[in-house]
Image (tube, rainbow, N blue to C red):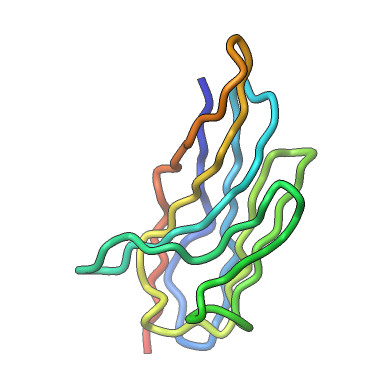
Length: 121
């Protein structure tokens, strides 16, 4: 009943920037936290950053100072501004959201399909 769709991935050179978007749609009552994860080639999916319902932001050490997470409550869209990209940032980036729905009132954990980011040296 709810879904997330990511966009904005692409191929860039080291030092470049990308801005990823994730839009939630469906029968949404509210959105609590939203997160970005990355699955690098040959590695498990790892947490990158999240933003809580209260607006607090947290980052993995590897992206601090380079990435910025934000959200637009009016459009239910999550963003990831990625600056000073490094080859090790390469991977499929997934959006995750903790979403409240009604009847009954409950929270769902929802994942997007992923968007590929490739950073070349």
